[in-house]
Length: 263
Image (tube, rainbow, N blue to C red):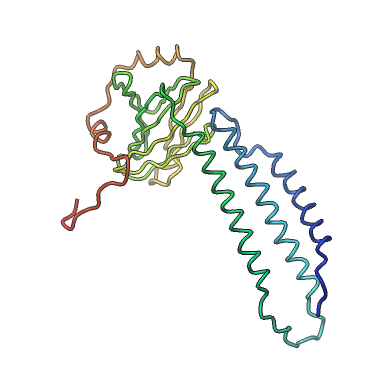
């Protein structure tokens, strides 16, 4: 028999290791500058996940090193280990605890997502058209004017971006907004963002979409409402007919399945 585990010592080691890891990991600004109302909530979610992950990592490492030290084979010992038939209580614990952690993470994430995607009455809609390897934008509430490679939005106004992929899957991501959304052909996906910091940012495609994927970027300008209205008023080009057609043809859910005869 090996005797009882040094529970208090192991627990102290786990807590100490968790504190050290969290002190290092939480001191790093992983997401960079925040420029939307959703950013602080997403950053808090990340920090909570870091704390939980640090604790789980510490438990595994302390248990691993204890086992390596306590049960190491003595030199010259070639005998078999003791037969072990399992421990029901331990197996229940290591099944139940991860389940609780996963459910907590899922519930907390769901709550944050509901909060940051809560629509408001005066939200502005922007159509986002993605294709290899360029971004373009339509403003249906502004006579459907059109811009290529440059997105302007007013600060402190909720924007509902309606995504329309023209060829393959792309992904809409402005790091400072913390929101990322896939653009899927045949489906209208929606990203809801309320920018809260005036500035110039980059829209980046984060879904591998071909040889030019790395260069698929666009300029994002967040500006006061007056400047935004002036910029929109200067746009003369309308959304091209093929792109406008994708707005009406895309579905808000999954596209209908192909029939036996094809599309």
